[in-house]
Amino acid sequence: MEGEHAGRFGGRVALVTGAGSGIGAAAARRLAAQGAQVLVADIDGQAAQAVAKELPWAYPLTVDVAEPAQVDAAFEEAVRRHGRLDVVVHAAGVDDPAAKEWIAEALRADRPPEVTARLGDEAWRRVMRVNLDGTFHVLRAAVRVMAPHRSGAVVTVGSSSAFDTLVGYPHYAASKAGAHALSQSVAKEAISFGVRVNTVAPGPTETGMAARTPAALRQGFADGRVRPYATPEEIADVALFLASEEAANVVGAVLLANGGRFTV
Image (tube, rainbow, N blue to C red; front, side, top):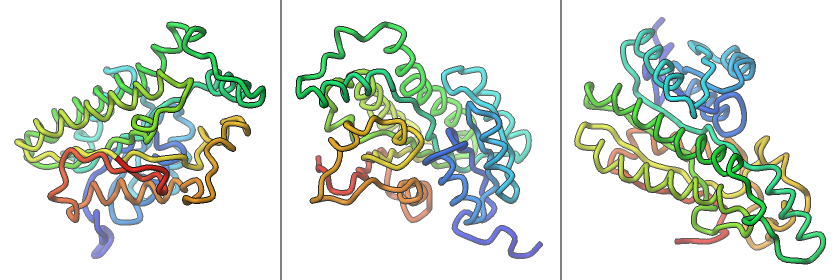
């Protein structure tokens, strides 16, 4: 129908990871509202289906970004269904609730956190596999699909904690700092093939991940001099700007969206 694909992303095909909740779900909804056909990817298949049902022209995918074969299959499905892929927003990520609780316990007891010595290999690898390896899997698949068409935009969701590292949270900070550097390196390479890669680095944001943060730790993030926790929609809007033609000259950026907590 005439006008059915109207909007900033009218006629575009988008894939969003971590789209079953939080920033990913907000990005999927924003993209659909602005005309995109969206593949809603999440490790929680039921959550992906629930979001996809809200949207026109959407299709759900169950994807663990830590598994390269699943990522590749998702991108292949996008091409099979639509013949191309124009936009990727990579919002999938994990935190470590156990480490957060150790930090909160230390805050309540007014003592320094002791995390690194207690941090097991499996906890370290879980965060790295999803946040860093998963970003590589998504970027690699995106370049493989987009480069032959000489166009495309990829936005990865990093974290302000890569700069203002939280004491007692080394694996999360390292995974996001690595993902930032990875995205910037790929950006320099991919732009030669018409593909733009950028990163949005949120500060505290009201997501399911934040809801699981212990109260003592949330209080530590509170600062009356800056904006409160961002909404997922506010971060999604930054991601959509980076994915849009309005940001045609923005390549390899790590855009802070932390409400003024710090600058770099």
